[in-house]
View 1 (tube, helix red, strand yellow):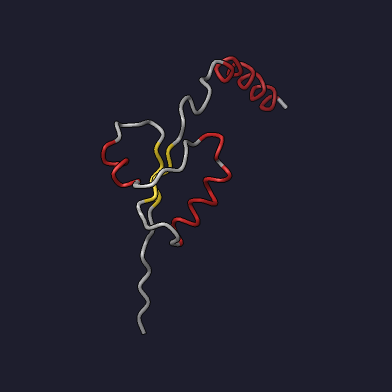
View 2: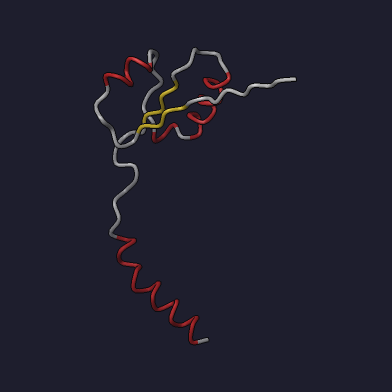
Length: 88
């Protein structure tokens, strides 16, 4: 019982810190897909982007050029694909 009260008291002490936190995200999130349109990675990324559309910027082509020329951003997600090799 004493442990429960101590945990409650500690959580109440930290409440003002949570209220003072910044809003996230403070600027748009970019999702970069470096593969051809219509591929499995592109389709999966578009499905994810549809769910997070309020926080991301517009869909633009030529992502590789944009990625290489972009300034260092705090919120950039790069979608990659790992290859699977099957042998018999």
